[in-house]
Amino acid sequence: MVNLIVVLIVSGCAAFQYLKGTLVKAFAMIIVTICASVVAFAYFEALAGLFIGGRDSSLKFIPPHWIQPLSFLLLFLFTFAALQTLAEYLTRQQVDLGLWPERIGRVVCGIFLGLILSSLLITTLAMAPIPNNYPYQRFEQRRPDAERPKKTMFNNDALASGLFGTLSKGSLSGKRSFATVHPAFIDQLFLNRHNIADNIPITTSDKAIAVPRKNGAWHAPEGIKDSDGNPISPKSGHLLMFVRIAMNKGAVADAGTFTMSQLRLICKRQSDAEKPLAGKGQNVYPIGYIMAPDTVQIKRLNDVIKVTRDDFAKESMEKWIDFAFHVPAGSLPVLLEFKQNCIAQVPQPVTAEQAPPPAPFIPTSEKQTDTEKPDDPSKPQSSNNTTKKKTTSEGLGLSPIGRTLVGPQLDDYK
Figure 1 (cartoon, rainbow, N blue to C red):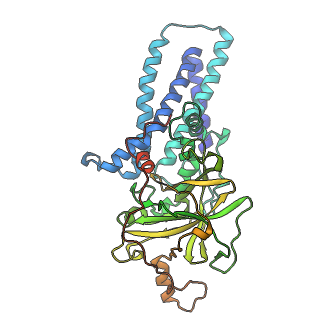
Figure 2 (cartoon, rainbow, N blue to C red):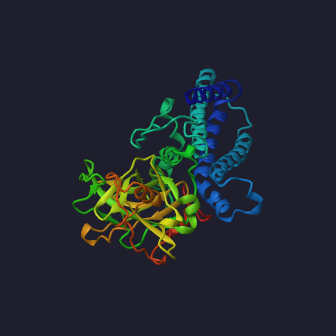
Figure 3 (cartoon, rainbow, N blue to C red):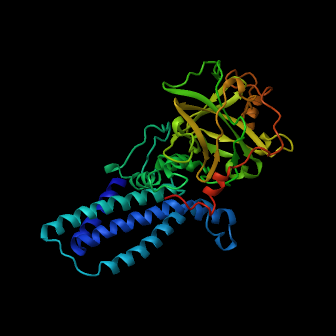
């Protein structure tokens, strides 16, 4: 279905430019479309952050999960309308470049315009809280693999976001690169809503999670095993690392239920570590979390994790969970992103010898299952699950980077 839509959009744009336009106007429309998409990509998070953060009473009728796609769409449409009006005024004088240059040039420009517009449409739909098989099934439903996405005809689904990512990391870039904050943006969007049929929220509070500024990431020690007692070996060319998140008790309503595909670690090459938000990043998804001091509970990307208020220690506002990642060798984690609008900075990883004591986590629902089936050897016992957590948020919280990415200060994606 999506390939048919792409063909119709491309064909329609090519036919329109051939029959109604001129080569100069067709080329001008491409420039206008690219400029409008740059504005939309650069500021949709800031605009959505204003609405999600303030939630003015006049906007209560808009579900929060629709705010980002609507912000993206409105920014593009208003910018396109303004720039296209200006372009029509500037190109009001007829310019004829000859019969064949005009005919061929109009069609070529129309095809390229159609590819960009169809890519923007796919991006907008991927942000929206609609079934994950619309506009197409990018990842396998039962066993999604982040490294094996399906693509559309002409591979144009990531054209618009990839073009902006290239611009944002180039010589015209600002302090933050879109290619670092949102590498493989289309993959992020589709994996974020992979289990939307299970009523799992795709957005949450911008303060839903935090990463400790000290010892928030560390290299895995020797002897780490899975819940079946099998040793865990890093993938070829990768290192096993842990990153600790602190979930905010006040955000459990939206943040407490999530899939592993909604949590992603952004890594960069060590040579680029001096400028963690410049250049280009890479998405790394968790393989599980620590359930015992030397044991990792392995999870698939579409497995659902449930954190309830019962999982928090008494009077504690934070729940620590240590997630395991296979980080590419020669790379360092710089950001941790959660769902569609929450981001925290990750400190420099420390060695295994400097690692903090582990924070074992077993969801309350699994503990209850263990109680009901005490003789089931495949279920971990809950007697050693509870560790005392800090009751203060000192040293934790979203970084200024995280706040600005969802606030009005996000003004230098260029």
